[in-house]
Length: 355
Image 1 (cartoon, rainbow, N blue to C red):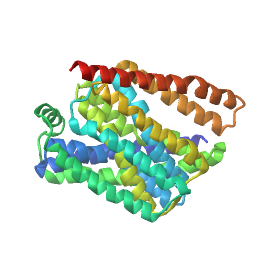
Image 2 (cartoon, rainbow, N blue to C red):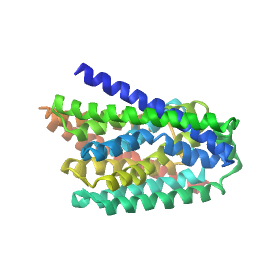
Image 3 (cartoon, helix red, strand yellow):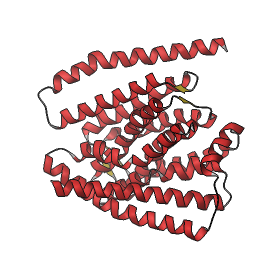
């Protein structure tokens, strides 16, 4: 067990380091190619921070571990919104000025619903994967076109983060290559150790993917969003989370199902995928309240993630307190969440009338 956990930890570390080097090198190469900092931040960086999820899901799909591949994506999206966005808001209340980021929230909700609809028959076929990848192409083109209409303040924020010195292209290409090598090695270790861990503790690969692997592969997003929040680059902090969620579904699951069609388990279809859609929907009223995410809302997101993770762990161990916990979620937390969301919508309508 210790050897498995050590291999998993080292593999996750290699994934994070590889993603960091890949993003750093690719963003500098993009700057050298004279792409605007806004486009770099919304595409190169947002996609680059999701390379650990991409590498793990592709390798898992190739090895036939579809539960691990799907769980990694679904768990990462839930982790991104509830944990990363919640923690970033607690560190620094988030006020989103970017019109494009605010438009992306409905896109994130739509892609989540599309995934649930595609998985309704219990499988994700190669045709489903092709549709998702086509959606990625359309989304990326739309992001680049929309970036040209952003305000000067938003452009300045992204220029500060990604408009640095261009330097030597050969050195940047070396960073990209080294990052890819670390990603390949780390991926192999993470997938093998995650499967071994699931078998040794007697839980499903889906649960391991939803928790340990999803949180581990999302560490680049944690670092990017938290650092941006501390620096006051709030559009970057939020845009990284929302963009990564969209990319996870369209690119990662799309490419993974092109490699190998997936079987969607009953647990994922009836609980985890609807939970991902619910988490995406929860973002809508938050962004409608003046496009502001307060510390109180951030705490609510963190509590929701703790409740979700607690349910997964109790369910995986078939704990005797699971029925009581499920009842508490249904009777207490869910109604409270609905009341909170309705209150956010009321505040949003009231603030709109005052403007």
